[in-house]
Length: 215
Image (cartoon, rainbow, N blue to C red; front, side, top):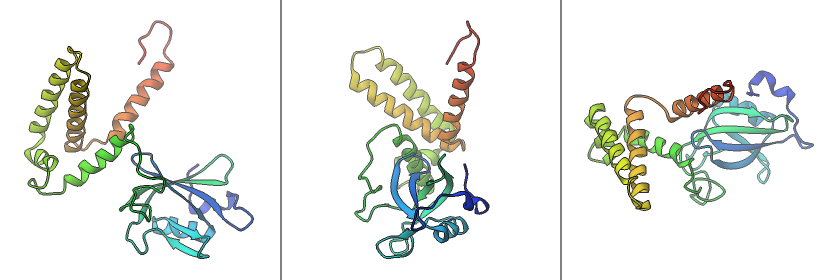
């Protein structure tokens, strides 16, 4: 359930007035940290659209990033089925952990969630000068050039697939996925739009009648 200021009363705070809050990266899905909120910090979070917690060690309200500048911008706040745990999806302004790591659980593995991180990196490069990076230069060249690169990388992956060179296939697949993400950025399409369409197709295919082609 999405949480708003008008449905806080339904939450189950613990005996000292706190509720566990899991913070998740809004794009990659990585768990960034776990903290606690009381009613006041929750209200301030919803008001400021930046995560504010209750520090158990300092016994005061604590806005993440108040000293480092690495704020957590709130994207959504939901409550679990038992109404005693919150899930905050956020966009971090910098490293989340005081150690300098991007999460309080160490640097994340390079799983599929890295695609969302890569999309975010590409978005940042889009605002830079062409001389600063290959991505910025490619985007500055225009959609036609990016589309050409996607076509070239697609052919190279297909050719690599006719060989037994596993590393070559991985390299070419990585090139194709990267350039596809750049193309999506150039056309204003988010990776989430693509995954949503795939999920929609899967949902339709799971309800298809016998004999129909499934995803």
